[in-house]
Image (cartoon, rainbow, N blue to C red; front, side, top):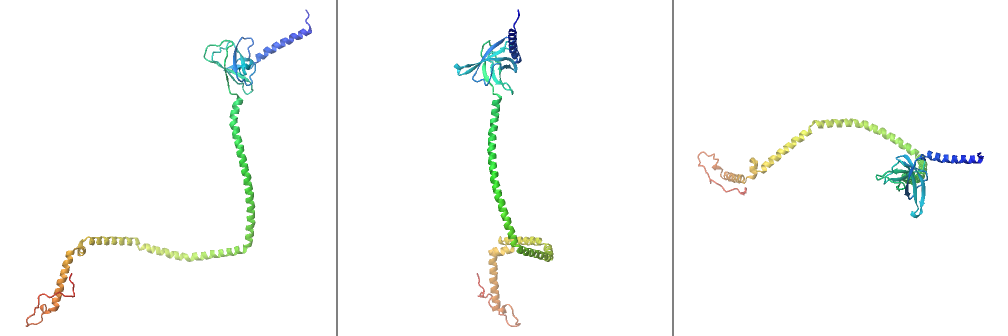
Length: 321
């Protein structure tokens, strides 16, 4: 039987489509010739997950996303069907973690195995989501953006301060120029006075030099006088004077306490009374000698000596205490 050209083209197209289908799945890592188990996961948001995205276990491709359906009766949650190779045992408590597929983009599902009994075909896995690179970058970049914004504001304030400082510096420079002009005019007006002042300063310097020459002999004499005063040993003299004053203080204290002859003479009333009585007796004796001298001195050879009274009255010139 002769096959027409159109039939040949149709058969070739069917073969090409079959080969394309199997080639596509083989390139994606799917084993189209092996049998798989189907599991379900419910997410509230799949963040761009599409059918045929890989299912990984410890980084190894063990399946793919088969289908995604919208559950409008469950608050628009999403039911994701997973085809997992038959040789991979999925225990109860396994979590399907939705994560980023890497720097090239796309989404993958990582299986985190549980510790329970092995699940059967058609069972549901636990759902979880991992923060993607974009979310992490956003979290890390947000403080940087905030700091950058604050830095820009601070830089704006600094620039405003520099502008104000520039205005102040311009004003200062204008004042400086004006001050320089005024100072130059003042110097021109007082040039003659400055010259006279300089001449007077020169004369004063000369006079000071002459005065210094005259002071040198005087300072030499002063040094000689200082040497002479040092030779007098003033320190030793002052020390001897202090020692003498101390001895005098000791003597006066001894007299004041009644020790020694001088102390007894000043402090002992008995000695004073005896001296007073002695003075009274001596006064009587002198009075008797004055009134009757012959009693004590007689120059007559033959006449009888007139002895007179043995005692005279007290001389009124002396007051008896």
